[in-house]
Length: 294
Length: 244
Image (cartoon, each protein chain N blue to C red):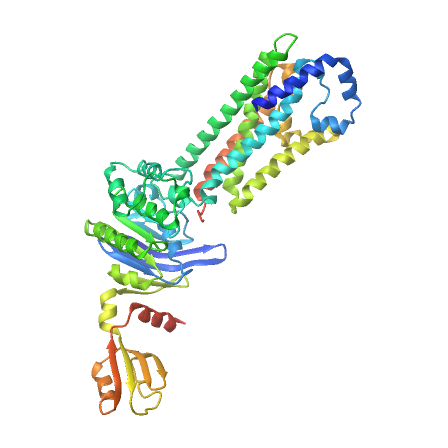
């Protein structure tokens, strides 16, 4: 069953492009990555899901209900953490969290304290006295305190130190294990790699690909770094299936997709200084996608 | 506001003591000065006349308060970027608007009642003639309508303005323009028809005091405008793209 269903969603801000013809769906119980450079349209898509903005055309539904028409009802089950958090400066953290909780029914009040403890958040400080990282923690707690069935994270890790990022990821994993579906938007691929099972890539307002993250890594590309001991022509390795070929003197670096024996045959009988075959980082695969599209 | 009224009435005791000479002095003022000060044809040595002059300042002050309050309370969430917190909560936008408008109503009423109490207390403190409490009550009634009108205008402007930062300056200009137009009407009788566009002229103090009622036409007009701007606020807040 899909929790989020987006069909041909298009949004223009006046004449400026927001997103064009975006379609994808997120299944129940998965952590779905939403990847793209800044300004690609990730936030635009998310803001439509939350009915903060209205689509120019197309539709989006969550739990089978239309995001716009049934927004308030849907949002009972959504926890949202924006990339930049802003709260009422003169409130104390605990007051803000209780105010936030007051919007939901059947809240477990202890959860505020439990989450605050995990995230190491001081509940008695005033919002205006908090550092950016601490405000972010407030955001995490207020986004999760009502045990949402769908968690929407829009570039959530900015401002969190690595330790807190890890705690945050653990928390998200925990929620996911308890049945929450997660939409995770980011331009940092390593964190998506860590967390997500499937990803969609958005670029200049359009979806360019939807992939299973393991399949993406497993089936597709190997990264070759070959340091030659004898001279070969620059496009010696430029056979079918090779991408992003870079030559630095005697060192050849490229991604290869295809029958590995073909490449072994090419190397066979040549003198090498060094050879490394690696799993490419997702960054490299995505860079390859971006470039292919251009 | 309380201090203003107290200081104002303190000054009145001086005027009253000086008697007729003050009236003569003001008569010599050029018409334009009298118009801006709101003196008109009132006898400011009588406590009622003096208080009626005061009324213009009440209009100005509460008008600024109301129009700014209306604008800011609607525009604030986007301006302070707290909109991403509030508007993703499971409530209809109209409910949020309602809560905010009720807050405006309470705030405005408190200011009105404060003005009322301070007026009654300090006027009686310096009043040497018969009590004018009933007149003050009537004036506060029209003041409240005036406040509501400008609060709804402010809220409407905030809901209509795409760039929220422009909303407050736009609201302030509307109020100021309305005031200048009303002063201009006092100067040139020929533009009397403009009184329909400036709430400052809907319930002139002198008329309220003289007739003891509010002009039905302007009462109706006020009601219509308040309804219109409130509807605008609801409609455009609902249709609005919340961007921060």
